[in-house]
Amino acid sequence: MNALSASTDATRKKTIRWVMAIAAAALLFDGYDLVVYGTVVSSLLRDPTQLGALDAAQAGALGSYALMGVMVGALTAGAVGDFLGRRKLMLINIVWFSLGMAFTSMATSVPVFGLLRFLTGIGVGALVATAGAVVAEFAPAGKRNFYNAIVYSGVPAGGLLASLLAIVLGGVTDWRGLFLIGALPLVILFPLAYLKLPESPRWILARGRTEQALLLSMKTGIPLEDGESDGAAVSIASRASANPPAAVSKDGRPFAGFAALASGNYRTPTILLGLMSFCGLLLTYGLNTWLPEIMGQHGYGKTYSLTFLLALNAGAVIGGLVASRSADRFGPRAVVATTFVIATAALILLTFEFPFPVLLIAVAFAGVGSLGTQVLVYGFVSNYYPTPARAAGVAWCAGFGRLGGIVGPLVGGFLISAHAPSNVAFVVFAAVALAGGLVTVFVRRHRTALAEEPAPAYPAAEAATTAPAGSGDSRDAGQEAVRQGPGHWGL
Image (cartoon, rainbow, N blue to C red):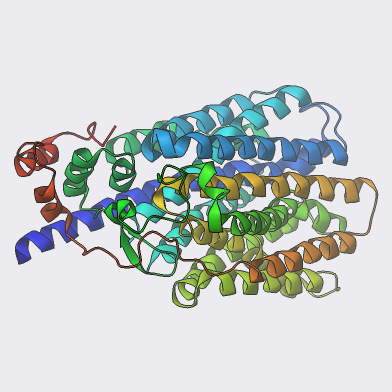
């Protein structure tokens, strides 16, 4: 029995490593896609031979088109993700945004560039929304905020990569080459994801396919249990017990998808979580789009201004990972509120004439409180909802939040085209960060009312022996499932 438990534990760890690595890599290229525009916008403004004549307001609108697509993609993923499955959405959208980046690199006019940015954003948004559900259902309880931060740190890491490549390849390739790099997941990541990314056993169980869920649980080592946002473990099977969830329809069935978000105790927190994401993404994309141009107007050359973008995303990566440790210990609400306040203070510091090293440090802390905060927000949301509503919850957060992502580049473009002092932009962004902190404080702690007493935990291998009567020899079937190839990942 001990050997069996050790084998199951090793299988589970191996599955989790692959799932987290694939999700993080997908979001790395998502972050690259969304930040690379900020690295080239100054060149596009100054060289009309690339796409045509472009002013700051138009450039801000182009920066928003991708985020409009992200919003559409995230909300679409929420509408179908809890019905279609996590694996299928991940695979489809890796291909989608890779092709979008490749075609965007070939654009020859502003309208075509804007349309392709919008279409690419749809794939990016669907991936961002799905990744949160994947992490929440595969990551071990008690470490979900940290695992979520690892995966979603792929977004600022992608921004970091975009900034580095823009500096290193500045004299080697133009903006087209930088965009073409964003298509690499099609040939690198997609084959790996197809072979190594399983469907979530918990999602399959939530869809009522119990035997298939048990077999996949054996194969992956992932137990058929869900974890609460406050750390309490609750069996998914107990959702059909005598203590029904708060989010149920009149016939007693649990709501799924977006219907669950607007029901019962979830309604008000759903609004507040959306506003948190709105503030975080307004800061993220407002700064990532316009920070190099703003610092360029302060007299810093191209390399120096891109260095600020590098510091912003480095701060987001490091700060998000460090803060996630505290979120697992103290709860995400307090930590998210704190990081928003850190962003407020850092952005106010940028309005002063400090030396270059001090400004770099302030920008890094602004990164902690912008995209680093958004990493924590995704973790907060993905663990706030039960499995039947998880993809919809993350999609709502990512989708509604993208309204902020759309507004951010527009606000920056408006201020620059109006020749407002750069200090004004930092004050506006600081006010948004403060508002995000205040909204976070009002999100109440929430226990999803599934069942007051958790069902006993059981290893995945043992679970297969509890299959319903009439299902055949589940143990033999489970062993057969393990022998099957990578194409049998619960599709």
